[in-house]
Length: 391
Image 1: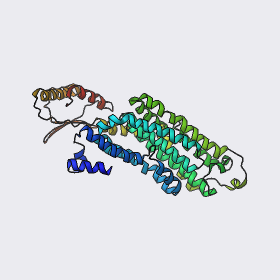
Image 2: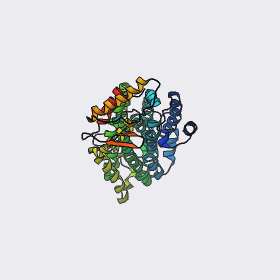
Image 3: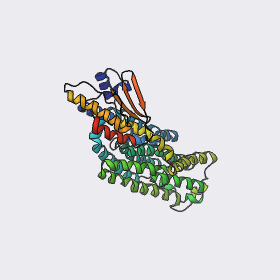
Image 4: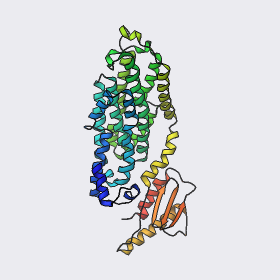
């Protein structure tokens, strides 16, 4: 990624975001920039062959390190995609989306089957994080509104659920028994009933069960993937079944499996501090899963702006017909969309959550129709492609 940033700096002369976003890079330049930036965020996500660091980081780190890594650090790849890949190299992103889907599907299968065979609680949760990360990574790179919003929701949900599972396995159980081996536990529902209930809800969230935020995020992510590639969507949907397999298998062995005997009889249930921490994470997971519109209403405008923000600059061509076509097309677009008869064409056109903005030098008009909704940007984008696309 550093090499890509240096390349942009050498081409443009600066690294100001507002400047580099407005440059139309050639396709081959976008490909090389995309390769550098994508590999960096693929390591951060992580995906197949680049995920060996995550397991050691989770297993060997203290509880606080695992929680911060799962809830915050891994989500930086989401932010990086929105800030660098989508606005900077859109042509390369569209071209290499099938390759990204293949990598993410392989990651889902690899991480899921590796999770099924592990016997360490923290390692199991770390492997499941890789599987879920591949789903939301493919969702946000699908370049579909539903996929991007689903990726954001799944990333947020994974922060709640994964943190709760790490606290349960690496905190509550490990503090009482000094071991993370699943085979040492069994029958804990008899002596830790409150922990069993909260742990069960977190496991359901990890499975992507309905009424949890994970279900909404995973469903929308897979919908976005399916919109771009039905085959990738079908293969990616296997994460739903596989996540249920390894999560319920782990829960059954810890809470119900085996007989209660030996040192396990001396384990105590959650104290007040542990109960409040897990309860807060469960409440957020369930409430936002029941009513996801709390987040979706705000995301609608932001994601629409990310996808449909246009900056078409009218320049002078040798062919007068081309210039006339662009001007007439944009004027026709304004008349169609706003029913405005007398509107001088401006040199720039923007679409965002506030409506349409047309600018020419120091003159600016902000126009907002009364029926501006979340589906308007896609309709307006269609009109731009039809009547006013600068070629």
